[in-house]
Image (cartoon, rainbow, N blue to C red):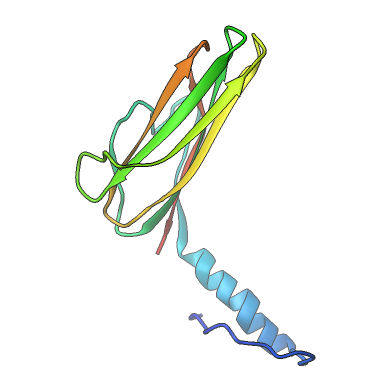
Length: 146
């Protein structure tokens, strides 16, 4: 089923089941059919890393969600994720940074970042940590929207 332009409703208008199904169900199904999960990290064998390795997007808009974890080894453990994106390689334009701080020694520090990469762009995620153990990827998902 194809996309139907969203309708503008008026106050007190009675909506039929057919209209509602077309506007909500059918358009939602249309969008869902175009959202493809590209990567979903197996934390034991991740397909992505947060060491600045550069990746190339496809011809779709890509939604990326990254989360990492480390354990504070002092009373001031912190983790920072830096995302770089650019239309040419190397991806060196910082588009966002996420920072998380843990005040309690031995407690986990979680850091998360979400971003969108335009079609055919390059991107990378780099982590930096202070007073924590090694940083591990908790999740990295990529979804392409066609």
